[in-house]
Image (cartoon, rainbow, N blue to C red; front, side, top):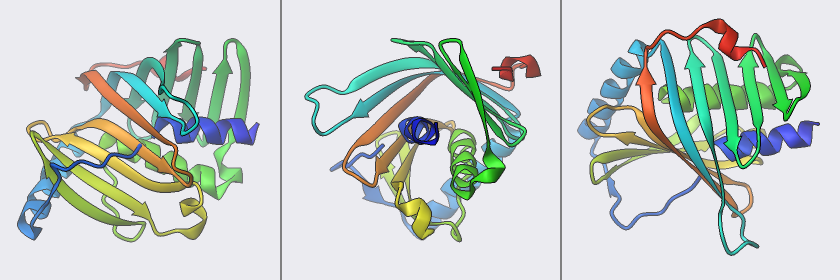
Length: 209
């Protein structure tokens, strides 16, 4: 059970190397962080479609899945995969609720420090609120029309599972448009968020799995 959940968690958070990356200056970093923090504090709810590309070194083609993600502050989060299979996972009241094509199960996050940390990372990656220098070594870059923040975990246990996280932000909106994860191996995942709707009314019943 835990192995399957770990695999899911690693699937949803990728890695990207771009020749167009330019390091931000200290002034640019300060301005970028301020913009993101201002916007993230205003986000009460967020729903978005997503397309996930999972790269496995032994496969010639990335595995593509898609679905919908819904977030409601302070910590309600649902990821629902719709294609090519039905699988949803909800983070709610300190628990992970799983619905695997009708087969339901639950895990108490409080029983695992690593689950708790990953839960915090996922919610932070959605809201853009991850700029914690105590938890990560963070570097900042400029792209065409976008900003990129790279997070390397400082915690040795977490680093065994998550080598690096990357969040790509739309420069004008200061919201996350892509989440990437480089695992401890060289496999990686890229999730593209699109059709975002911010602060629409979302009933708590959405997070019943």
